[in-house]
Image (cartoon, rainbow, N blue to C red):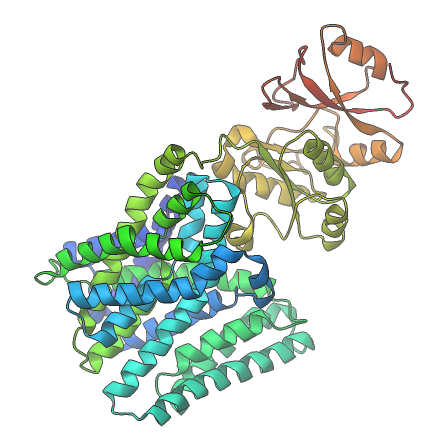
Length: 597
C-alpha cells in the first residue's frame, strides 16, 4: 500500500505538471486540463480512486489544501486599491456579485431542484471568477485596455470576497444542520474572525520586527496559516476557513509588512496544491452522472452564461463610460476557477458527512459550469471581440525590463514616438524616477508569478531586457519568448564580445538577439549618455535620407529603432540590420556636439 500510495502521489504530481505545462503552451487556464485529467483517471479510466487511496486522510488533506488556497487568494486583496478600480469593477464585486449569487441560487433551486440552502451555496461559489483563469484568457483575447483592466481587477478582488461569501453561507448551513442557535452561528463567525485577525497581527508583528530570519519567513507563515485553521476549528467547529480568509486579508493590508516573497512562495505552493487537488476531486466524480444531473448542469451553465452574467454587467455598468460593445464582451467573459472548484469539493465532503440533502450535486454542477465557461469563452471570446471591434490590433507596445538611466532614456524615446511602453523592475529608486519622468511602470520582477497576476500587458508585444542583471535579463527573455514570440525578444548586452568568454557565456537557449550593434553594451550606453550623447528622433525624406543623417551626426551614431510610414516599429539588433528608407522615422543615439542641419 505504501508503494502504491507513493507512486500514485508522484504520478499525480507529474500529471499535474504536464497539465500546467500544456496550459502554458496553448495559453488556456490550467484548471481545464487538470479537471479533464482527473476525470480520465477516475470515472472514465478507473485508475484513481481517491477515497480508497487516501481513506480517512482525504478530508484533512483537502481541508488543509483549500485553507492555503483561500489564504493565498485573500492575501492579494488591497483595500487601498479599491477606490481606484473604477465604477464598473466596484459594482461587479459588490451589488453585482450579490445579484449574481441570488440569480444563480434561484436557477439552481428551480432547474436542479436543490434546497434553498444548497442553492445559495452554489450561487456563492458560481459567482466568482479569478485571476488564474482570467489572465491566460486575456492573453489570447487581447481586448482594449478598459475591458482588460475591468476583467483583471474583477478577478483579483472578487476571488477573496467570493470565498468569504461562500464560507459564511456554509457556516450557516452547518449550524442549522447541527441544530445550533443563531448565537452559536454568530460565535462561529466571531471565532473565525478573531482567530484570523489575531494570527495576522502576531505574524505581522514578528515579520515587521525582523524577529524571523528571512529564509524562515515563508516556513513561518505556512505554519501559522495551518495552525490558525486548525486551532479555530478546534475552538469552534468549521470556523477555520473563515479564519484563514480573514488572516490573509488582514496580513495583506498590514502596513510595514513586506509580503512579496511570501506571496511568491504561496503562489508556487498553491500551483502544486491546485494541480494535485483538482485531479483528486475530479477523480471522485461518478460517471455517468445521476439521472438529470448532466442536463441540469448544462441548463445552469446556459443560464449563467446567457442571462445572469449579462444582467449583472448591465446593472454594474449603469452610468459608466463603457460602450455597449465593451459591456457586451465583459458580459460574455466570466470563466470560473480555483475557488469554485476547490471550495465546492470541500463543502460537499463535509455536507455529505452531515447528511445534507442535495450536497452530492454541488460538485458536478460546479464542475460542469467551470468546464463550460472555460471551453466556450476560450473558443469564442477573441472572434467576438473582433466582431464587436473592441479587440486590440497587433500589439505595438514594449515591455522594458530595467529602470536605470539607460532603460528610462530608451523608454522615453519610444513613448515620445507614440508607442506604449511599460518599465518593469524591482529597483524602487529607478521605478520612482521613471514615474517622475511620466513613464508607465510596474514595480516587481516581470518574470515573477506576481507579475502574471498584476502586470497589464494589454497592447504590448515586445520585450527589451536592458537591466543591469545579465542572468535576469536572460530569464526574462526565456519567460516572455512564449508570450510574445521568439522574434519579439531582445536584450542589451552586459558584456562585450571580448569579455564574453566560454567561462562567462550563457547557454544559447538563454539568449536573445542583442540590441543595436555588436559593440553596444549597457555600460557603454550609460557612458555615452554621461558624455552628453542623446537619443534623437528624425523623420527621413528623399532630400534628407539615412546617408545624410550619418553625414550630419557622424558614422559613430547608433541606430536604435526605425518607424515605418504605416507606424510599424523595427528594432535594430545583431540579428537584423536596419536599412532606413525615406518616410521612416529613425531613433538613434547621437553625439551632443554635432551641429543641427
